[in-house]
Length: 294
Ligand code: G1P
View 1 (cartoon, protein in one colour):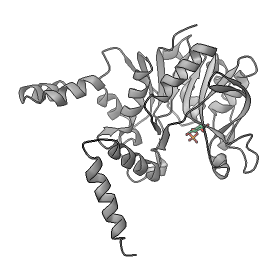
View 2 (cartoon, helix red, strand yellow; view 1 turned 30 degrees about the horizontal axis):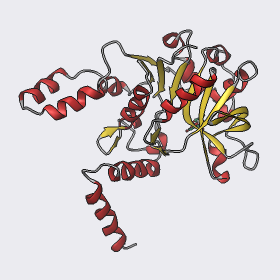
View 3 (cartoon, helix red, strand yellow; view 1 turned 120 degrees about the vertical axis):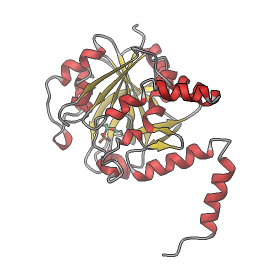
View 4 (cartoon, protein in one colour; view 1 turned 90 degrees about the vertical axis):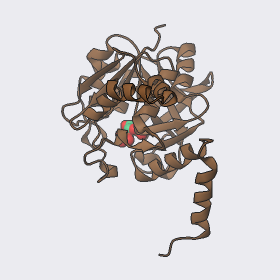
């Protein structure tokens, strides 16, 4: 079985749910407490053993590449000023030379198309795919848990979580088959099902381990839900020849592509940071004591 060495991050999205904040700044660079959203997602991949980080970007996203570059002047200045802790922190987050690649999705044709744009960089090996809107909080990362299921089953793994049935039309939804290890085999999937038609309440939460044959199917460029080239449709085709397993993730997921999810993430990460927990909790309590006048 091939090791999962590469991860793809589709970061070309326009961030329309978060305008005007995302007019000039990529949504992936908005900070949750003190790190940009994309850093959480890259850290999750690194924890899972990923060695090569592939970003599918678009226009106005160059700052993401800068973020993962070495800032020589900044590092020198921190060293000269004796700010060793800050410097060490930045260096821990820093990918090594040659560990990152960037390509562009030239036209926004959908998630499936964005993933397809990474085909030459991924090559002929299984890979992880992490959607950068979603950040996940748990002791062990979602991708690490998925790699464990992959090592037991081989082939394709997708992370799922239960949702309110009323929300199922917003996601890709899987149909449940027999239990396998800590997860289950997937017997079907549908992107954005019409209300009342979802095959389960398990939605695809934005983490995947996929075999490279997905690229052949994506190259057909067939349009699905919303007129976009959908990854879910290509996965459903791949399921005709290869099994898919679902990993039910039990941690917390925050959709940082929306203001509400982003605020939730900031509150959750601030409260889980011992250095700011008491102050932030006190602040929230003070707002509850004195509700703003409407
Ligand atoms: C994408 C996927 C969908 C998945 C969702 C998770 O949809 O197509 O299957 O459930 O991400 O966030 P999007 O949010 O891009 O509409």
